[in-house]
Image (tube, rainbow, N blue to C red; front, top):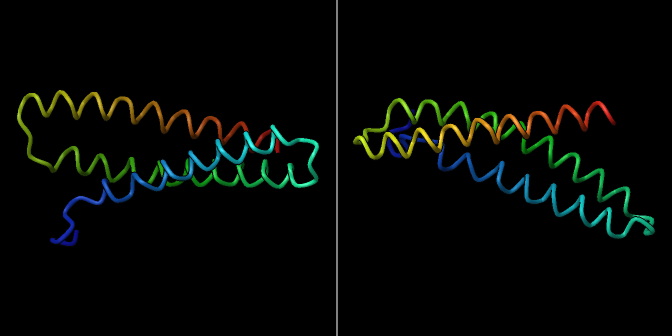
Length: 106
């Protein structure tokens, strides 16, 4: 690991957030303007963004486990990091489930 950036998780976690936000926005836009000839393109891009969110969230989750085991913290920090980890596992699971569902219906 590079010494300047000992923990890659804060950098990598931005990608799934951006991809998931774009996926929701594009899908909603496609559904709202479903009479438009470009609606299917918005929905398709939303699907691709969802796939990117799941992939990047999985990568960020791996680096978060490295950070969880390497960053020094006290008892309160341990409690906060455990709650954060548990919510992150649920979020990654939800993204992977939605991605698998979208691939199945594709």
